[in-house]
Length: 300
Image (cartoon, rainbow, N blue to C red; front, side):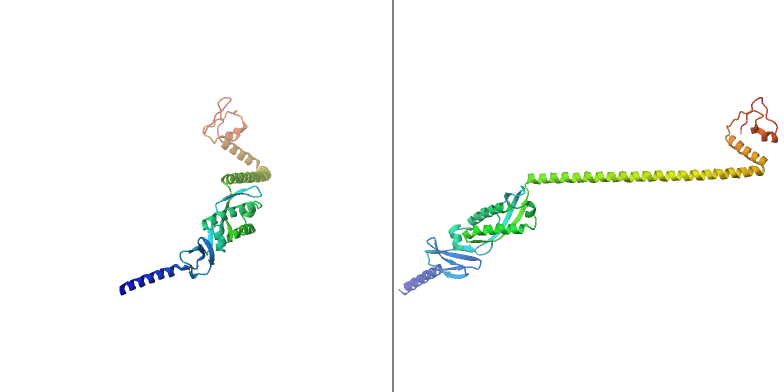
C-alpha cells in the first residue's frame, strides 16, 4: 500500500512539474513575444526573462527584436531627364509594435513582401522627380531621406519602423549603356580628329617657318659667299696685276707653264695646233722647232 502511495505521489509531482513548466516560457534579449489565447493576442511581452501563461489554452508567439534587413528586387525607374535606370535598394527595419505587426502581416516573410512593394513604389515616385546626376552624386542623400519618410508613413501601419533606406546600385539598362558608350566614343573620336587637325596645322606652320628660315639663311649665305668670292677675285686680280707689272716676262712664262700643266695633265691628251701658235713660244726657245706640216701632235 505504501508503494502505491509513493507511486501516486511521484506521478502527481511529475504532473505538477509538467503543469508548472507548461505555465512558464522564456523570452531572450533578442526577442519579443505575444501571448495568444485560442489564437487571439492578449498580452505583449517586450522584456526578456521568465514569464507565465495558462497551459494548453495559451501559447507564445515570438518576433525579432533586432534590426532586420530587407533587399527588395531591382526596379526600373524613369528619371525626370528621361533616363531609365535599374535601381537596387536596401533597407533596414525593426518591429516596434508586435501586436500591430501580428494583426496586419503576422509573419516576417509577409512583411518583407509588403515592404518591398512600398519601397519600390516610393522609389519610383521620388526618383521620377530627380535627375541621373543627382542620383549618382552626394545630392541623393535628401532623396533617400524622402523615400524613407514615405515608406515609414506606410510601414507604421504594420508596427514597423524603417531605420534606413539606401541605393545599393543605380545602373543604366544595357541598351542605354551601349548608347552612352557609342556617344562617348564618337565624342572622343571627334576630339581626337580636332586635336589631330590642330597638330597638322601647327606642323605645317612650323615646317613653313623652318622652310622660310632655311631660304633666308641660304640666300644670306649665298649673298655673303658671292661678296667674298668677288672680293677674292678682286684681290686675285690685283695681285696678278701687281705681279705682271713687276716682271711681265716671268708672268707670261708662269701662265704658260700653268696652261701646259692643265693641257697635258692626262697621258692621252692630244693637241692639234699650228706650228707657229703662240702656245709653243716657250717650246721654241728651249728646243728644236716642232715640224710636221701644218699640224703637230704632242703627248705625255
